[in-house]
Length: 440
Image (cartoon, rainbow, N blue to C red; front, side, top):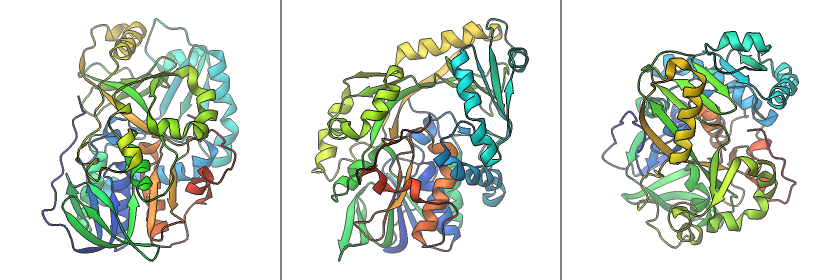
């Protein structure tokens, strides 16, 4: 089942014309809409389902700098500053808390990998401390595991996936943006090599700029306009528990990750455990993703599923011949992997005697959209003036969401970017450059 998300009302009438349209109302799309509206632009935010209906509500909710690829670090620094101020700016709690992140492991190789990231931490001024076996044991109140060590990322934290994107959407509306749910974008209107508007299932909007922040659907949307965006989605599983005792705010170990929610429940998952389903789009971009598959295939299971025939990577999506494909798929809501759900619960209960009676409230599946190098795209589209892309977040989109939206707004308004946008340009994935696979 889908996670429960704070509902947002829709504006009844489409505007006839706006400065910018944002397609997709996840964390990146809502942040982009907010920062565009804050700059005084008129904005229409479109969503084929409802705000945060797909990956942005299915995430762990981590807001971190720790263990990020160096290319993402400047955006992560901006994002953490923005997270800290958004509640005051918007007047709504997004659930952001600087709780720190605690990583513990009984795998010496994993511990060495965390240690190897410390030069990056020093370069970007991130406070992080290695933990001895005794310190790791003291940080987590458990008795059934013997950690070899751990790591404390001091200033990182979490936010609430159920309320963050809705709060950003409402913040954008307070600045004049309009929100249109159950309103799929069908395609762009183009004249003389430039975007002039967008066709939706509810009508047409003239626009000077369009940002595609459509998550797993982005490649299909770009493809119908002849623009190549190598993208693949992996299917992950998470569970939400019933309210329980507090064993820590944000915890990571090799076989489980736990995030305590504001209501006293936990979101739990296993890092790196996912399914990669063979799809027409996946076959098309297999060459681009080969380096990533080689590096990470041991943690990902391959197989066939419904996504071969339906959804953002199906043949219909790849060919772009169905103008109503987006509205026929309001919400991507894959079933959770029951074996993985059982493994998550067994690992957590086996670690914490306090949680022997822990109960599941609900579980869900999700499609995490990835790029070949596991680094997001925030970019103007060279082939089409006024068209922009912010997608391919590779499981990092929630924490980076404010920074991604901020950078997208800067690009659209032709401001000097706060960070070097080069690592996030779409062209790096399509110009034949060597793919350097980033960190998880």
